Amino acid sequence: MSTPAFDRKVELIEKLLKDKQYTTAARECLILIEGGLRDILINDTDKLEPSDRDRVRNEEHKVAKGKESTSDKKPKRSFENFTLGELIGIIRNAKFFEAWEKISQKSFPMLINLDKITSFRNQLFHAKGWAAHREATQDEAELIFDFFKYFGKILNIGNNPRLTELKQGLQQSELKLPLRKKIIDYLKKLENQGIDDDAEEMLGYIDEWIAGKCPADDFEALWQDQQNQQSTALNYPALLEQLRHGEIALFLGSEIPEKIKKGLEQEQNHEALPLTELCELIELQHGRTTLYRKIERHANALLLKENFHELAELLAGTLKPIILISVDCNSLIQEVFKRHHKPFVVFSPAIDSKYLGKFIVEYCDKPELQVVTTEELSDLRLFERGYSLIYKIRGCFSLNNDKLAVTKDKDCLILSEQDYFTFARHLDRLVPDYLAGLLQTRGLWFLGHHPDNWQNRLLMQAILEKRPKSLVYSVDAQVNEFTNIYWKARGVENYQVSLNEFVSKLQQVV
Image (cartoon, rainbow, N blue to C red; front, side, top):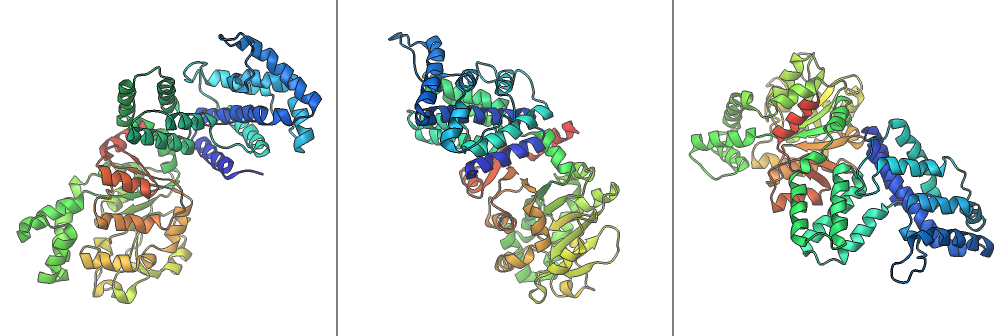
């Protein structure tokens, strides 16, 4: 019977294999297998029948003779000090599993030669420093994973023993508490994402510091350097592959609202007001029609300067339909997709109180707008029919039409404070079930969306509440103490990378 820790590891390794990170997947399996073998020898040898126990101890003594203590010259009886090859040698020579089956009532058929596991371990890790000799092939990684799955269910393994040991060592260390906590959080993160070459290098430094071989100042400098280079942890080829197959949904932020704010401030002669308050003021003084006209004029003037243009061009070349959630009210993404002949639909919720729960839909290949309920939207099965979905969470200029009842008295844009209050009150009715269902089975990335004001956080929360408690990612270089805490509290793994750098590296892969 498997444990939750083991199930999480299986899910992680399956994801690594899917992302074609075969070496990281194989290493993760091998480390866990080694830890499982070590634990069963340590914990169960004395439970064996006397003759079987003596046979295992005799083999242990033979190996220990080569690891004599320099202080007393007596053999060290400690499975902790043995290599994977030595552990497997004891298991094989002492017929350990045959003996263990008698007391555990579990069978352990050899799905793979254990000596082959040792060979893989030696080829994929250096004896010193744990750096890769070579890369694992897909067949090798899948073979090791198959063995791990069967092996893990029998022995109830799951947590990475090396990371557990390092966490215990850090708890007893004299490192400053804030830094120690950050490193322990880093080790916990590795439990969830696997250990690549960069992580292996850092784990080597942590090992050295705990062993007293690295001065505290040097270690802190190494740690800070690793944090500054965090962008290298992004696997851009794997990410691009997932994007091309529609396996990731993107939540796209924007710089346009802040640029619009500057233009409105000059016109209204008001400074230091948040954009929502500025919009509220204009609507109260001049009416909704004037606010809509001013926002549309400023937004259209900024289209050519929009930071997401290159990203939109890249997304337009993806193989499969994709899911985008955009805070912009303009049609930049739609125009790029049209040039590349990529089928799409744009949709937004109606926010007029009389029509809450309905959605306005615009097809790339139909002239008329369509108004549907959440159930009707699901029935259309747009994504399955090959349409990319562009959910304009704050509305879109192209979806406003005086001929439609849903926007005749109230446009679908979320601009003023009152609009956001309406959104917050009816949040469960403004994200359609069809979109929520698709988000359940896909990764989610926030790009260029900063949780630095309550309005942005509200829009994020509307989407996060529709997803299971799986890891979400963000690309946000504009972080401070609050936003760091916020991302972490919401289960979002943030990469402190600028959007320009992120898009540039994706383009380099292309």
